[in-house]
Length: 94
Image (cartoon, rainbow, N blue to C red):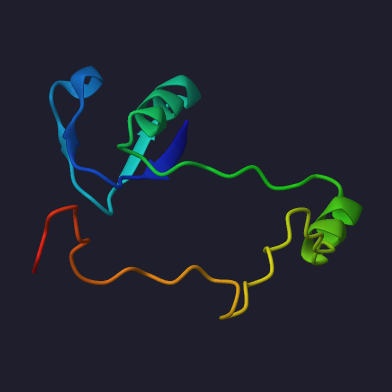
């Protein structure tokens, strides 16, 4: 039997309605642990890499490649000027 930490309180249907609270350890078979983890009641177990060389590769920072660079900012002269106030209409004497 394996065990995992409870991250959300629940009442277990397979153990006569026993309550499990956050922080407690839940002990059961692997299938039940996976089921409760998928439902969000138990913490998920992250698999550790089995190849030590793989672990070293993951520690190295990947090269950053910028595929879509930011467009250059338009200069003040090229920017359209915002219109202020109300537009005059034909026959408007204001």
